[in-house]
Length: 318
Ligand SMILES: N[C@@H](CCC(=O)N[C@@H](CS)C(=O)NCC(=O)O)C(=O)O
Image (cartoon, rainbow, N blue to C red; front, side):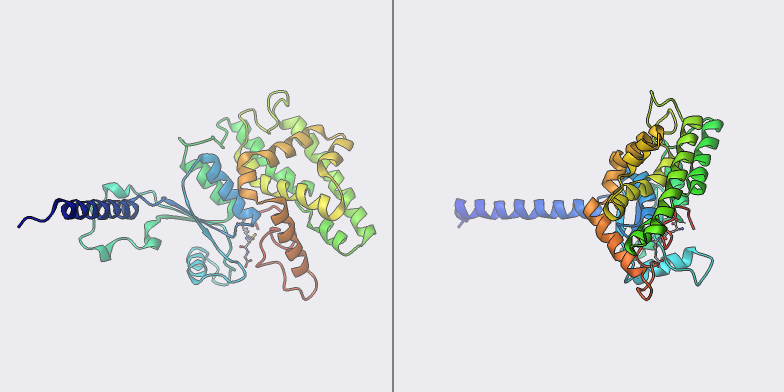
């Protein structure tokens, strides 16, 4: 006797639902994985350089967030395999990129010989400046171009990082420490240094930078790799000084007559990729509070904290 029509209909619905679920699960399993992976702590200004560059280039990537207080074994092992000094501390960022065309590769005979996660990536990069530059170069046809093509622009872009570094504007951690310790004399001294650094940066931007009527950025072509590397530090400067010292850095720049610098810092801090990768003001303050606490004598040091960019808050890639 044939099954009743109702039962048949039920059976068909179950089969359709099951197969659509299967199709869904299959699609998810076979969906191509992003070919880029970034190991990040989520609060590190150095790792933010790489993150920011990926956002600027519109590169899809897997974000591996690492707890630097409790580093996962695979992270420590990966770093050790990339750094020539076996005693080097494992640091974020690490960038991984699979440049092979996986779709063209002959499928392996059995699933067990599929490339393991670590063997998937044929390019692995450490050091934030190197990672950011790699991203800028490896995806030339995607997103915003971060690399100037004219040699003079390239030279000036490199100079931007050098002058920022030597101006001392990147080393604002001593200011925060003086404020934390309530040492007014030291604080005044550090703020005087910051103002001197601002003058140097402003003069540099006026002398070497693009016409400010055309762009607030350094180069006429807009936000560039040199700025990717500085934006995380400008962002932190603008958040931490008002909080700990009661100084609005943009107002200070204005008062010192550093208008070009003011516009430049504001443009860097407001760049959507900086905002998206930088965390909220509250998170930055919370993170710096922890770092300042750790940097107290006997506080455990700043190495594993990560948010300030090392004990000096310096922006170099040490
Ligand atoms: N020179 C490195 C510095 C990176 C760095 O200091 N990362 C910190 C977080 S902000 C870190 O991973 N620290 C872990 C540790 O020192 O144990 C770079 O530019 O990439």
